[in-house]
Image (cartoon, rainbow, N blue to C red; front, side, top):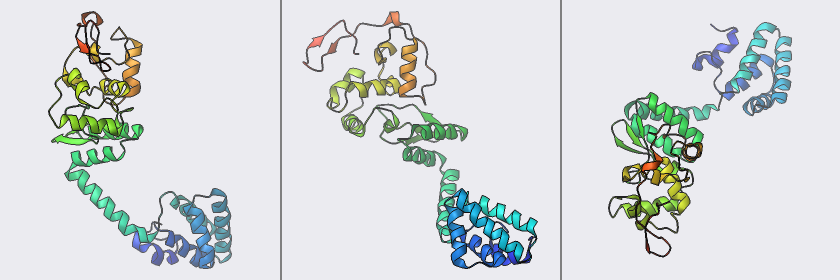
Length: 287
């Protein structure tokens, strides 16, 4: 099973695979006859992935081991294994902590998949690329990631039903924590019934136009009703125009991968109240 009998007492606990940095040091000491201090230099080189130092120290290891009478072919093979070990190896003292964390996460993913993925997505809430990656993984696990909703979403991703996770508002670009806290505080007094209701109840000092544009583009206001044109943040008259599609894609590229095209000609005229003066105004859309 082992290429050399000296390897068995060193690698038997890990089934012949170099797993710990301490094993690298012991191999170098036993086969090359070097001191533990010299072996520690090799360990540091491999651990830090210092290619020049690795080449230098492994060269010493091979030369001294061959000089002691070991088969050059076997020593070269071990040298390659030690170099490969640097991609995954760690201290033996860390193994218990790593195994406990691995066991806990594997258990949660297997028995509480929706909660696990919601926590994983929330832990990467500011990293768009990672959020996209984990949403794809959630879908592979048959977990539905629902679009954000101002009446349901919180700052983080939340589980709303079995195998269903609601997108967190904190993952939407250009929506800060202060704006979300204001929205949630207003929502605690009652659900939002319309876009106007939303705008009139939140703190407009933190929920500015840019925040509303991001929420609308993300689909977080879709449940409030009204014609989709009035929720278009970029002001493109043609609902299928490149400008409008670009707006959705740049602000929220994850969930809203498709949308039903609507006619811009059927946009209704609605009254609205000026945020600055409070005067009722007509014949103007909200944006």
